[in-house]
Image (tube, rainbow, N blue to C red):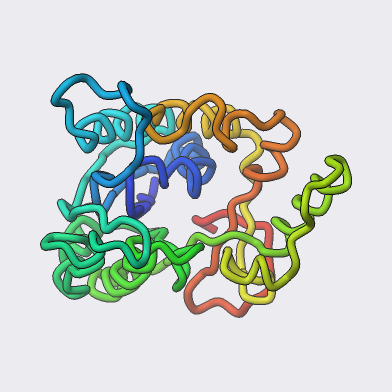
Length: 260
């Protein structure tokens, strides 16, 4: 048995980005540890969703533990930083925000967990945080440095294939009159080209767990959301492969496993 530590910015990111590899690792007999940088304080919820006086962060922490149980997570840790909000918002620079945290400080917190767990594998995000969210970019910076500090041998940067995503959008446009076909320029700010990606993990056997974990985050992922409203076939296409850049490995997509 080895240990996978998967590092994310906010509650719900874990199931969207790595839910399949987490459940796969669990079913393959590995230990799975989830580390979340913030408690998602600046997420949006519909009016009346929370109880009177209930802070959003408390609900999101509960949701994270519920999703973690579905995905086979043995340990959940929060680093204690505050959600920075979207890029350009005043919350980016608020005291305690993850975006303003010294990388070395945050990396040492994560490295301590990596050492405790004698982690074989760490996942973080690519250098643009998949789509430019400040906390996601910081997950990349902190995760990469923590792996150096702890000597973690396998580091995978979670990302998205631009080609795969665009092909899905084109297919949707062909089936939906009036749906705009995104250009390559439109996709430039989302994920990475497959020329940069090293690893594609087929997680279709665990899609039921992945979707159930998404449902465990109702404050952010409602039943009529993009993630849950799409038909099963579309969900399988969109979320049935999880994409990574393995640090130190030459680009060229391989269908692989994080532990091999």
